[in-house]
Amino acid sequence: MSDLPFAEHDHTHCASGGLIHADRLAEEKGLRLTPVRRAALEILLSGHRAMGAYEVLDHLKNKGFGSQPPVAYRALDFLVENGLAHRVQRLNAFAACTQPSKHHRPVFMICRDCEQVAEAEADEVQETLINVAARADFEIERVNVEILGLCPSCKVDPA
Amino acid sequence: MSDLPFAEHDHTHCASGGLIHADRLAEEKGLRLTPVRRAALEILLSGHRAMGAYEVLDHLKNKGFGSQPPVAYRALDFLVENGLAHRVQRLNAFAACTQPSKHHRPVFMICRDCEQVAEAEADEVQETLINVAARADFEIERVNVEILGLCPSCKVDPA
DNA sequence: GTATTACACGTTACACTATAACGTGTCGAA
DNA sequence: TTCGACACGTTATAGTGTAACGTGTAATAC
Image (cartoon, rainbow over all chains, first blue to last red; front, side, top):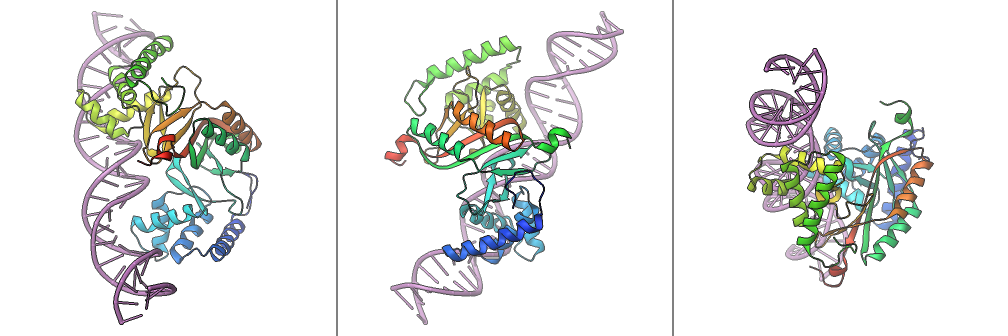
């Protein structure tokens, strides 16, 4: 798995690594990483980008799972709740967590040209958000930070 | 208009203030704040919360404007592009900008209980985001920061 | 003055995203 | 063995968003 967002790397490797991590996490926490759920994660991992629920559903269908939307949404919701994937609001899409071992309060960088999504760890951002919320007496439960712009490649050579 | 998110205040006042500001901005920048667009802003301002496009559309319809979705979406897109309103991704909704005079890179706090949305100015957050993006060689165009949790009232007395 | 262009705004029709509600099977606990 | 919880499949429908096209209007070019 890449620590450098948008850097080149071996997708096959990060996909299998992600699954291994998920299996371990499931065992540790007693999560029920059922076949559909694991398959959904695998799809996200190998796609290695944000995918819509219906796109995931298509793949699940091909693998012999159910063919109706709730099948995909339920699996994806499970993954999100357990930190194995994230929802990218801006794209109405889902992406496998690329840094599942860390305590994840990620920042997403979304290229508006090629739609690649990178996940960055940014504790500094989270700290400032805690301050902002504190000033308003607001109790934080979840945070969603998305940066839209151009990734290094598209900045140079627009797709 | 309130500087303190979630604080009590006079909605009528902040609605008219918002419209006056919009008129001035339109004049200064040569924006075409047409009747539908102005009406859409007025609806958002007086609702004083995040509203779905179809909800805005209903109000537009009642005021004699077109009744089909593109009418609302176009007016709302115009407002967002010109900083008079924001899109709240988490809720698939729109909210009038409460601090339109400031350079706005706002942070939203969304109460998951009462669905109220507050907008906070947070330059500190934006600065850290600039750093994060710089580390990844990512070019920022827009930023969306949303905090989900409980507002001061709902924290004490859940709706 | 008229042609051209740009744009706002209305329409119809459709695509995409998401959830409600219900039935069945499985598995562990009472 | 019966109950409850839950996973997962279904059907049906709700909610969100856009594409494409026609008309009117206003500013600019000729």
